[in-house]
Length: 246
Image (spheres, one colour):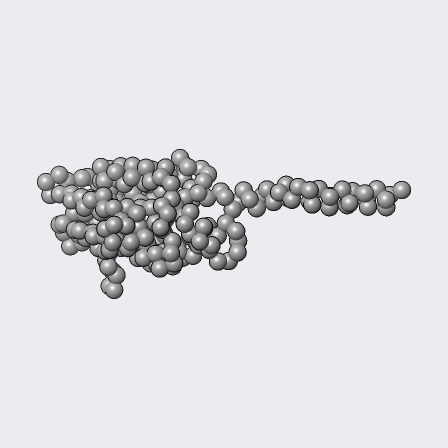
């Protein structure tokens, strides 16, 4: 009596899998569609991507809190653009085929931002994504400083919108002007200059003394709430924008 009962249950399970295979794929489907947008930030200098003192990291924390599902948010070290690139490919590969389809590329909704070397890293990553045929919704550079052999002033044509915030003073100061490699493909939202000699921002008690004294204006733009409120507003606006068809 026991064996026929087990046989009957196995047959019933097999029948259910044939008639309703989607019921057995719920977990895979939920995982594959859980990320509808990707926000990648880059910290500048030798800053840890987990250091909550820095505005880039604070912003990511707020976004993760406000978008608990559907949006992947992570901050990387500016030297880890390849790691960020591989993570994006993993997230976009919803079919788990190991290679992105044209639809997976076309449906990508990616936002990149960063401060100092992190701003340059954002453009480097955007260019890497462009070479793979993957569009980017928005790039945001805050006092972007290019590393050797990097060009953070020319925005690749796979980027739909780009914006640049900079200040011109001190030993470290950002790229004063970004331009579109293809103006018909990329909308430049502006190059916005901030003058901290005329309107200083107090970072005391938040940033280390060496940042506040050795690269004062460069640090001020990183801790300026006016700048980061605008950055955050642009990112949130882009998160509600559908992907762009190349």
